[in-house]
Length: 154
Image (cartoon, rainbow, N blue to C red; front, side, top):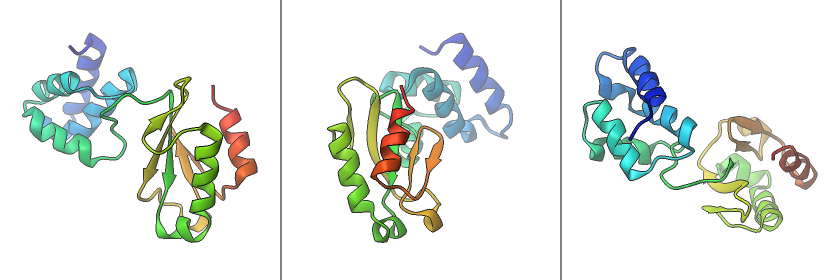
C-alpha cells in the first residue's frame, strides 16, 4: 500500500502530464525515495494510481537504470563501464572497489551500507573513470580518491 505522502506526491507529478501513465518514472522515483527500492506489490499500487497495468509499469522500471527492483544498500554505487572509462582504467577501479567493499556487482555490503552496480554510461567521458554514489558524480578516480569518497558515507 502506498502511504498518503507517496499518493499525494504521485498525484502532483502526474498532474504535470497529459495522461497519468506518462508520469511512470517520476512516480517510481517518488516511491523509491521513500522506500529505497520498488517491490512487486508497490509497483502494482503505483500502476493502479497511474491507471496502467503493472506489466507496463514494470517494463518502464526495468528499462530505467535508476529504479531498483530489489533491496539495495543505503548508498548505491554506479560504476561507469563505457568505452572511455574502460580505456582510462575501469578494470583497476572495479577491482579496487570490489576488494575494498568485499562484494561483487549486484551485491550489498554486509552492513547494508553500499550496493555496487555497473552502469552503461554516466556522461562524463572527459573525466573518466567515473562513478556515481546516490546522486553525486565522482570523476578521475584512483584508489586514493575512492578511499576518501567511501569514507565520507555513513
